[in-house]
Length: 313
Image 1 (cartoon, rainbow, N blue to C red):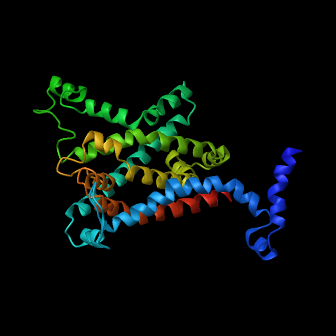
Image 2 (cartoon, rainbow, N blue to C red):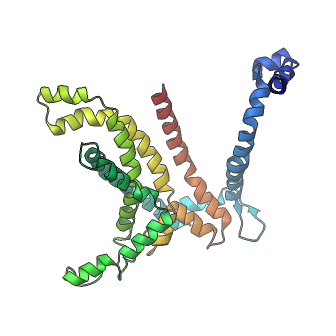
Image 3 (spheres, helix red, strand yellow):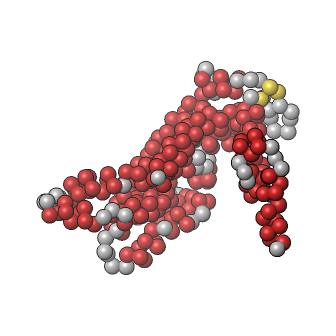
């Protein structure tokens, strides 16, 4: 009985509203808002408020521990008139880093998915091992790779033992190879996500298509190009968009492995925003750097949502 009274409470209250208001909000608007209200409050407190505060901060010249001064678009103008030269370089590094990592994840992830989709012995064990890089915390994996690539690590030790090179390879200290080394680490940690999604996509492809193509004399490469790739188109698109967002916003591994160096060779936009805001004490400029990448993420989220809604339909 008590549950019926609770359930009828909002409905009875809704019947006392005006007809015009019920037409706009719906018949059970009070019950709906009672259920959705907590989620709306959480979203406002944890997402909307920090985002709006960051926007307002980006229009100020504000240093840590001091009151901010409203300067309008000055922080943004400095990115385009050459005053802030680090922004352009960080944007280029972000583009190369994200593009190289996404391409590497796709190639390695596809190769692993095709192998693990076959009836190989101990397939489930290999599938479990494959997910280990994704399960390891980013900080832990970064320190492991830092040890592997260090001058006293096993890779340089093997090079010295067999006399393969005259000197050590300074993976994270040489500006020429620091970014490729960073991309390699990112590919290692992000490939399991690609493999998992591609494996799910491969399992959904009807085997009759492959059997019919084989009867018609199609080669392995032709079956891959004309059956596998078109069937995985949606999976690849959604995975690429999600991976692009996560990879371009990656901060932990880069900070631990290189700290943005040497000579800003591995400074991406998220790291540049952090270095400007916290070590540089310029909170307003750091917020403006973060806001500059928001339109890029909004476009990705729009196409990602649109693609996922099309799949559900």
